[in-house]
Length: 114
Image (cartoon, rainbow, N blue to C red; front, side, top):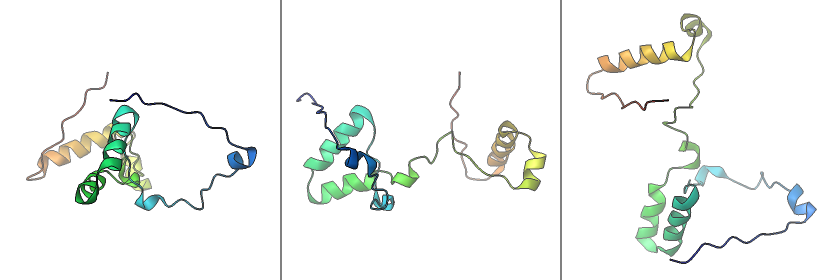
C-alpha cells in the first residue's frame, strides 16, 4: 500500500476570509470517519462503482446523525421536570429503571468510565 502524502497549500487572504457557509448544504453530507479508517473508507468509496458505491455510501451515517448514541448528548428538561431531578445522574437512574420495566427492550451495555 502506498504511503499517504500530505501536501501543504497556501491560501490568499481573500480565500481565508471567505468561509463559504452559505453555499454548503450539510443535509446530504455523510460522515466518512476520522484518521486512518476515514482515509481508507474514502479510498474504497472513490474506487467503487455502481451499486457497490451506493451501498458503501448508504452504510455511512448522515452528518446530523453522527452524534446520536453519544454519551455527551444533551437533553433539555422542562422546568417542572427539572425541579424534581437535581442532576443528570438522577435522571439516568430513573430512565434505566424505566427501561427495565419495558417489555421486549434489552438495556444497552454500559461502558465503565474510569
